[in-house]
Image (cartoon, rainbow over all chains, first blue to last red; front, side, top):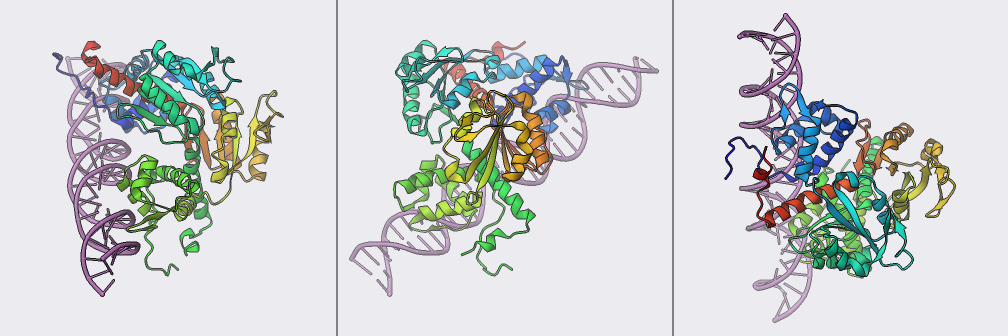
Length: 230
Length: 230
DNA sequence: ACGCCCTTGTGAAAGGGTGAACAAAGTGGG
DNA sequence: CCCACTTTGTTCACCCTTTCACAAGGGCGT
């Protein structure tokens, strides 16, 4: 079947690498816009905020797309990463919940030029349904199933209040959606074959607070542990 | 100085554990609201979406706060985790950029009851400055430095377009802010002592797309690699 | 054509995180 | 008072990730 001898691609790209590929992609697109034809691992790593050894190892998982002594061809690498991430195809996305967050997502420019197309906005509230947001008419959530089927939606975005999230999630899953991006602060229950990623605004703040507390405690030479002991 | 002999807290809590503590905290608060007094590691782990061994190990980094044969006291554990994360003190937060995203953040309820207080909303656009959002009057970004000082802001949130992010970041740093939550799709340059966390809406989608592509490729029995070889 | 210099790709080692499994410790019933 | 049962806290082995260091490979000037 595979005749070519030298194919270093493992088909098993580490999760940590996958999470960084979008970073590299963005840095490369910035270079491309500035008309820069090639870039070394050191330069690209600096632009993406990682160290160069990590970057080289990450890219080596996709194949040998660099040229020793020169670096990487910007356009070629953009294409290879895009393809690996599946961004060369068109992904239809539905956003449920058109509050401030849903609106922010709908208006976020970063989707269009990366293979994502917002195909539907759904909400429950009568005063939102029918209004126009980001060039789309908001439809009632009752249309969820029919929209998923007609628009071939594979990725669903949940931007509802926490109380509605699991219900929306169940309807997504029942309709055949297999990837869900969840902004509601709840743990979603899904079957094995469905991927969920969570973005939680307050968790990030809490992690920052932890480090911030540690910094200020150190500055003051305090020993929190003993002070607060029972 | 430290007189008590048995103090298992290492002061070196793994980063992965810190990232999960907010999850446990939320699950515990839900239990607390339902009036449940104690919880076992298995139950709490299920509610937080992790396995029980991991949960027990995470909690053991804070100390021995459970009772063998019984489980954990919900209220006590809430207090211990809150304290560890630094949520028992009041954190003043400033949000720069009052677009849809900034508004979503300002209206997000999850902050108030976790020690975070939004102390200022700043923007540049004349049509936003002066308007009222989430009970606060939006002020012009020129006040950034004075607001940081007068409100003792330790955490800054950047919700501006990408083009403005680094500039805002520099001003935050110069004014003495040491923790930054960045929603703009750029890599921020900061000095060593400043913590930056990034939330990127489009990166999460790209990671989902990668897995989704893989799933559909597998379903169709395709061998992408060979098909697309040069 | 040759050799110098630069940069990639990778092997090996170190570090951190995960999960299974178990001993220690506490509860409650008889 | 003792025993059976429950659940924690921890040990250990494994896996994934990061990092260092360097050999292999390609361009460029002479």
